Length: 345
Image 1 (cartoon, rainbow, N blue to C red):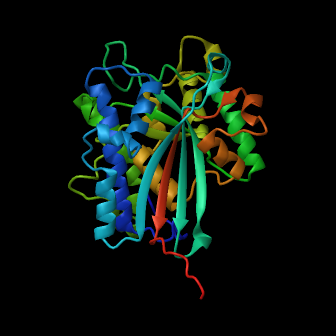
Image 2 (image 1 turned 60 degrees about the vertical axis):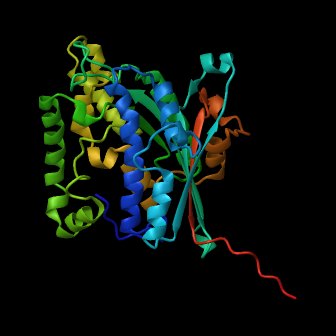
Image 3 (image 1 turned 135 degrees about the vertical axis):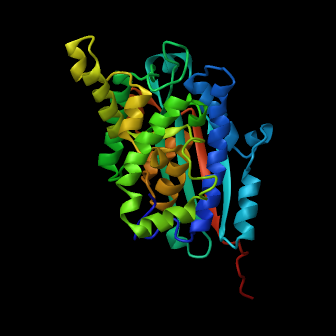
């Protein structure tokens, strides 16, 4: 849960602001995951392009969002918040040789905070994201047995090597994540929804209910009637360490070959849900609670330039056979109004 005595990375961020931002990013996630409900079987690149389009100020106008960036800024202003939000998208293209010979990160996310009242709080952080989608099971249904079949151990290792380089050289942490695309959990069969809820409630029992202060803070952020349920969620963010543990566990549980015990294998939704906290791993929660509140990500200039503009002056990514992301999302938050400079006469 969102519980910390540390000042938030964005110092003027209130619990009311958090609710508005969660509402915005959850509306994006729900529309994205409804692609599965229409009977489509979209690949990761298509889902990522739709996600970026939904988040982009211009691209989102092509969709009927239940809660748009304009709605978000209106609610922030009406509530007396100091914050204003803007989201934009940058795209990069690569030639066929690069696409064929290098692994490409799917998405980069940059959070840029500009404090016009006290600039010492300004910061920019970024993360690189590798996306994988859930495939239907043998019955052509989505269930606990469904797998992320496009997961590749060699690609994972190249991504991990790149992230380890930046985390060691820039003294940062958690600048690389996996994004797992899923159907909205409420669209699963009843028995599958019960399994998902059961796994999450077991985790909740050991967290929020042990501390009244955490429970109260949890209630402040989520509206009990409509926001508490995890069933409207779909997209999940998982750490590289978490992915390794999940993929290793999948290998250990495979009975096809004893060699699989030491391999990272494409894993099932069941292994994911058993391992992670779905609330805290949802895409909206990660952006708001982990990046905006806790400041998770890499602030190294070399890394943020790589994420935002694909600039790699030292050719670091090619050394790891990894390309900068095709899509870069820039979430810009500003506190206070811009005032003209005062001139002396």
